[in-house]
Image (tube, rainbow, N blue to C red):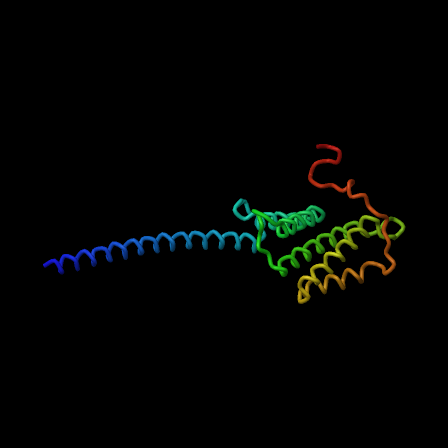
Length: 193
């Protein structure tokens, strides 16, 4: 009879271990389902161009905010937002994000697009010359497109937009160096803290 009780104890332990493994598996499955649902919501928001308010995804939130700025015609702010997203992507340390060179190329592409559109808004002066701010935007856009193509040479949209930009700006374009301290950094008027 001792053998039978030993057998019952061993099978009882096995059953308890199997039940615990099942519970751990169910909890893990529920957690993964929750995470997949959360990521799916973020992806849908990004695809539809909505603003993301979830602080768990700061890189995505910054990207969506910059995209919205560009969509509403605030091209300078959009370019700045994409630059900040790029800075976050390049940041090392505890808040580091694993970002592919293709995603960085797309960020540069978006910076270029918004600067190009900003330059197109300014267009020409009364005498038909390109305004200095537009020239500066065009050259910055050109640099952004070129950087995007260095990171991902297959980014056809960047190739197309760069060729379009090069057809818009004259070959001998020269600009007066701009003072970066005079650039608006936020929505605050210049000179205020």
